[in-house]
Image 1: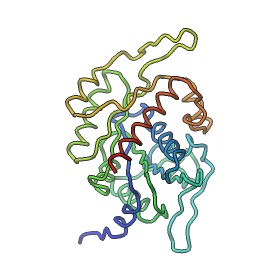
Image 2: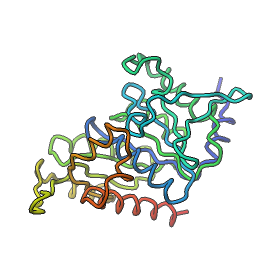
Image 3: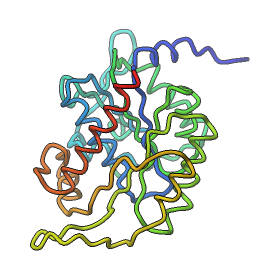
Image 4: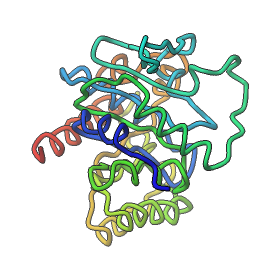
Length: 269
């Protein structure tokens, strides 16, 4: 028996742009990019939601300083996302854990069901953007979003410059092509380091071959974000970098990249 998707499609129909942020491997700063993109878009006057479907490692609450937040419900039995600001709402399984160290031990069907619940049984309201933070890889979570949202899925792949990451990036880009997603481009995080004393630029991880790869997949580098200690420090303190990063090279590169993403989608619309 086919599942009735009426409620799911009605909920998705109230969201203008769905952005899936994912990566081929962990440790590339994917969640930081997703969180800061959501904050940036809200600052531009858009109604934004951030959906954290990284069930086994939900870090969005930590990055946004919302670790002590809890989910509430409506009289109709729907869940209410947590409001970071009047224009930014957030939902994460991290809000539902009794203890932050409690592991989520779920198989694929459980995760698929949770993603459905997080979309159709949550009072998101009408959104301009829903930024979806997915776990590394091309497994159940990003596949479920791609199947639910279809060709309306806008995808951003986050990576780092190392050669070892290239095969994972290729898999992620192939995933987008195979499922006919709207691939916005690739973010090269931790791309280089700018010395705060002499402004010399050093490519600590070397220069990978990602530029050659993206030509094959007919996409582009959305931005190259330099390594900056304050990015991690602010995330640990629950302060979005896009708000507190000042005019550092990383902050300027991140803002320029987010402007490009917004422009792509607004012009497309």
